[in-house]
Length: 145
Picture 1 (cartoon, rainbow, N blue to C red):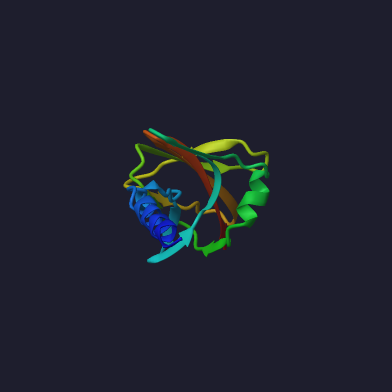
Picture 2: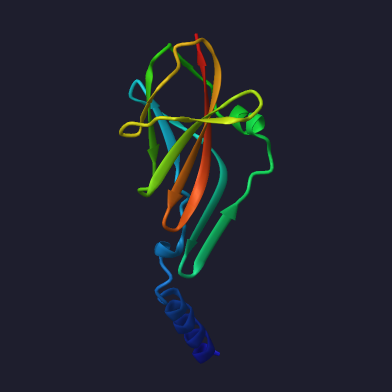
């Protein structure tokens, strides 16, 4: 009986040392908006990631308006500057301003910074990001007073 317990203990120890480390865990890339040195996490819409032996996919079933409600609307001033930061060094970032009918207008980013409109109102922004291993859509909204 003692031999069996020792054998089970050895097998358990060896199984724990197979090289399966935290490197096999995946952390989804986060997107942040920075306003006045304050970071705000954007809402994640769709997300896809594929590596050699790993694949992750999240497709959002909710509408843009519902997704943007998950983000605490930023209260900003006309013409302020926001910075967009995305984890894991994406190869491209495209920013869109969404209209009420959900049509999209490209917003220019310079060094990942954007200038907000000078007109008051509520604005929803969609950030489309591409990496070699995948793509993602992030959302945030602002209220300009």
